[in-house]
Image (cartoon, rainbow, N blue to C red; front, top):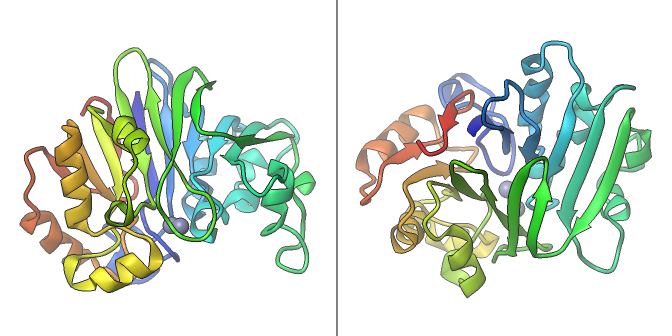
Length: 271
Ligand SMILES: [Zn+2]
Ligand SMILES: [Zn+2]
């Protein structure tokens, strides 16, 4: 399979000349199955999902979207995803079950007046909304395992995605320093590629802990313990400039290859 990194920022988009090389869109990763040309699975729907419309070249989106959680930087792109918001689109949307509410009602907490002009059923095409529990599911031809991870403000999942040729894990918002369960260790164990929260650096430890995020060192420690094939530092701080990310890319040491996620990049899994 292939991963197309459509948005690699956390918190808010980062427009401006200091952010053009790594990109300013918030979290979104499109997954293209082996032998296919187009993605059938999208992880998170930050503003990066907007670029999937042009990527599809005029065709509708037919596939799944799995949200790690409902924070704005992971869900704000949904109503702006034109290829999914047309009469002939078919979208299965998954998000972490919580508070005994339906997936539709959970999504409507951010996507309804007065916060937003339309509600989930205002999206065109065939949309279905699923409140997901931890465990294994078959989604869009992939085997997907979900596990609850430590973050702040609402239930957050990490996902492990497997097909016949490889596996990757996606944990964009995760504070392993605040608690790391065995099921999360198992989720990332031995994956070919780990995309992990790297919003902060060690000098920002207090903020990382306060907001429930990882530092780059946390990501490297987890990747090392899990013996992953490659680590992709993801969910960059919106204030981290291209030049600063270049320095971090050069300075970070780990026993496996490390990549600093860059919007527009395509990664093969295994790398
Ligand atoms: Zn986030
Ligand atoms: Zn978050």
